[in-house]
Image (cartoon, rainbow, N blue to C red; front, side, top):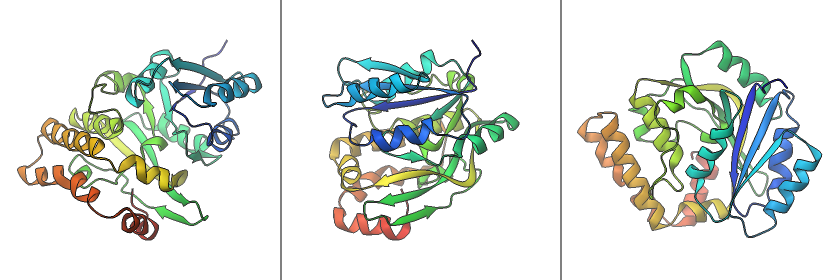
Length: 268
């Protein structure tokens, strides 16, 4: 049996309501040579049943299951551990990928081994159908990442052998939800490069659930720790450390105002 050219990795917890859009956006890719590893992170809804139904329809799907929730970093590392391909594609369970994402992204990744991670531009999709496109810098540095918003993590294709050099995703009490920012700063901190393709190949769901997930003080504290650790790893100037407070200040802004900001600006 030939090894798949791409391994798609995804973790989901209680995401049954979104799987009917997310999973087909991967299975119906115009580039079809991939495996799709999905880790059910201790779901208590019908997620696991739905995953099994999809697996019966498409043998490219591989299902892992955590008996209890272990968090996104842990679950993604489980997927990476059994990945057959060196090229890993991220996907979040409540978003969708453009159907030609892999067709455009995979050849670019193969032609540019100098990049450990390759992302794409994305569109924020709101429940009323409103769409906001997000252009981003092609070659962001660690200093660029201080202010944030310069990548869309679930649009990434990553090199497994390069991620291994930084220990894959960090699993600790602070990286339960903000593991991707920490990973990209680890990658940049050892001299690897991140590149953003300028095509819009990912659709990011913006709704009340997303706002609720991102606005709680436990996550704020985690984000502040991650920023501090990332700036330290990258030996950034002292002035950067003021941005450690950004998550706390953002959390004080009323949710309704933040939602309007996202609708107008499209920033993540």
